[in-house]
Length: 232
Image (cartoon, rainbow, N blue to C red; front, side):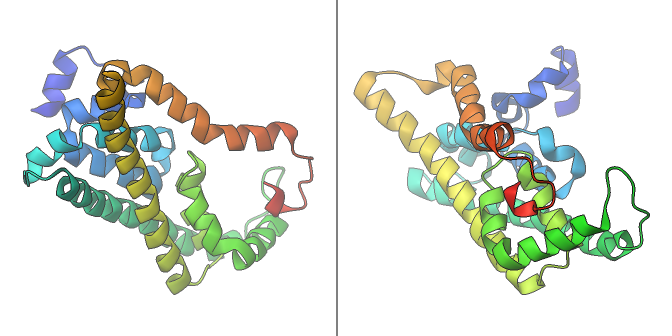
């Protein structure tokens, strides 16, 4: 029924990049799927994870009513945080599991212009040294968070270590985005009578710029040295 409604309304693929699209047409369940798919499915790298959670924080009370209206904004936020964090943890776990399954076979792959055996060795050494922090930080960086758990699995990062930092990273990411959206909307509306719901396009663009800026700066200004993965 939801799919028919979307198609009848004149769906365009660009709507997949708009957080409000998911909230309007699927609510909580579609948010959970997006958060899972962003790391659990290869195709999820283009999905709007950060901006979706920020906007979900703005609409947190409305979204919570779909499941269980507590009548308390803090309880609503923590309920959403628990469910969305679980979806993110599950998505990362699937990516990690896939990486562990395909990883051993990659060591026997024939080298070519894009693939070198030394890349696997360098990735393994990188995760041994920075693995925990890398998993947490990757959660806050678009595209990178899609492939970080897969690479961790490929290089056979220790399961317990991955699980711990996976949980910490997911909870920190979801908490910061949801609460920032909710309380920033509440504060700005009270202080300046400015409703963020009427300016979502600008907000989403700002979040995309902020979250991708570190990656762009690193790519544009870092020294080219393909022999060291820790410079990526």
